[in-house]
Length: 349
Ligand code: TXA
Ligand code: MG
View 1 (cartoon, helix red, strand yellow):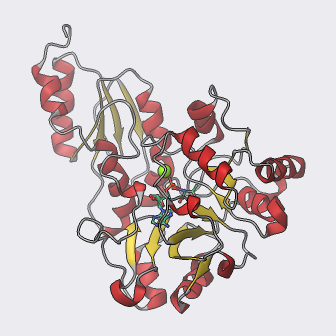
View 2: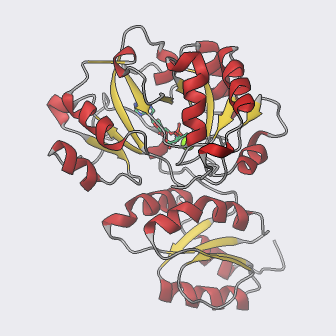
View 3: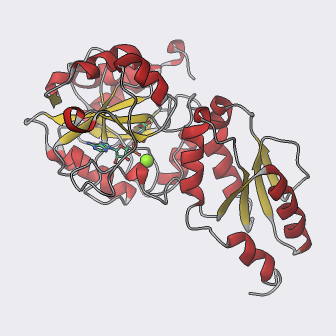
């Protein structure tokens, strides 16, 4: 993570003025890079959707400075929201609350809620303080094309949008420390549904429960049409272009040998000792270390011209929930891919 000393005040001011003028600015956060626009300028928010190729009915998170007044953005704010903000902001937690009537519905895809987060990256904080004198909100999804892997460096953002001219500028704050998107907890239906964990992340359900004395429940979007919709909860998301499969260590070692025999190119993401592959990234065997490096590894392995990205399944325990959630979505739709690759002739079509 970049230090405060590294922040270039002229770059921050330039980015804040660009946002105020309605342009899109990509900026670092501690989770992933965001593609920002003035949350109170519907045309600017709609430019985010166009740049990402994202459906208009998907809500975006509004990023706030540490001093911002959440009552400007949300209404019927429960005491639990204040307690969670006190405990985890600035940091990788997004809260879904009832949207204040004055906030344009462009940020929430027409839903009556709003997602709020105060990021901890010093460049993000400096930008949020410079933008509209610290009183504005920056709507920002992850700075990637819809459904693709989220960016954790400025170069990843340039790789996503460099050619199309839709992004006015990219602030560089180094590699995002957390590496996967913020935890999202829905508090908008607290009285009837309790807190709901819409997306697992670095702030765990246990950590949330320790603050508000209630364990967040699992999303019920399938059976409740009034539940908030979150695109990060789509079955296929965070996906590279190369198919991804996850296997436990023993199965993976066998698959690797058979793929080699069949003339297939495998790019490997792993944390144990394993035989060499066409390409490989070995990640730390800890949830935080693995999460930090995961998206850069998926992008790097996606660039190796492999037939398959094979990922060594992390343990299934709670500390790995966020990582497993992202891997499952990256691998969605690749069922049968290993079988298919082993049963077709590598040299032919
Ligand atoms: O870590 C993060 O949260 C990053 C950084 C840039 O802050 N942002 C991010 O944004 O991941 P995005 O748009 O890629 O994912 C935000 C998720 C989406 O699944 C969206 O549907 C959900 O948050 N979301 C935002 N506002 C919501 C709302 N009002 N109700 C339900 N879900 C909401
Ligand atoms: Mg995203």
